Length: 359
Ligand code: NAD
Image (cartoon, rainbow, N blue to C red; front, side, top):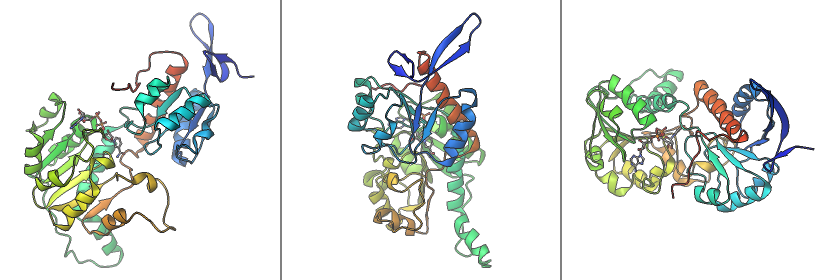
């Protein structure tokens, strides 16, 4: 029978300290939305932990929460949904810890989690460079139309008409959210010789230390930037930050990039912006309804999301399916940090990366 310490069930293990052997509880972890690469990196990182892990393909929702029965720990990714009813079900089943293998935590109802005594941990920084570099990849691909160029050459069409781009050198880049990823992105764009404008609710000296970078009000950033890149979290105050009103303030032909969260952008307003030529380029790694689409192969099905399909049809739009984080380095850090977060919980230590309810 599984031992029980503090109400938690799990396999009993011992570990050596300087003076004595102490029992610890190794908790069973249920992974939702797991893919082959999650299994690979978590199994590698688990070699030193030897814990029981069960991997489910299913996204977490009210119907699938039952899969985590008897698992004190659940591990979630960005499109797993944990609103109040799901959390209540999980808590009733014995879940104690929600370990997010992501930086963002907008998919968890933190207030309900706190009320139910569920702790939430995340991985605040696994590789800001991974997302920043992918952001730059989108900019270069859109500007120089690499996606079209690649297909042309494969088709033995060596014409370069229609592939005209612009020098990034000397352009003005607006960075909305100058935290870890925004900062890494700004440093790269500084290397291209761009002028950097920043907007952040909590300005940082680290941003203004980069070349000639300076903070400006949002309206000035919108009006002055040739390229605008979003790196702030999804919060009630940033929901639809890009809307009809903010798009109207932008330069004609602006390049808009979002590698942060889909709901920062009102997609319908952006579609109108593209149709009116106000937005000259759109690069997104996230989409507000991505939960229905991303991380799954839908190539044999008829996509029902007309908005997404319309967006896809524009020649100046490039969409990637939330792969900004997807580097070897980042996956390794996500796995080791998540297992270290869980070990802290098991050992009743302070949780280094606990996500607290803001109220
Ligand atoms: P961070 O916390 O280091 O930085 C976020 C910055 O946004 C902070 O400087 C913060 O002050 C600022 N901010 C907060 N509220 C704001 C507001 N109202 N207006 C403007 N700025 C505001 O986070 P990070 O590690 O740089 O990550 C940024 C975001 O990137 C995450 O929230 C997540 O949504 C997204 N992300 C995407 C991927 C991907 O694969 N595409 C991977 C990781 C993270």
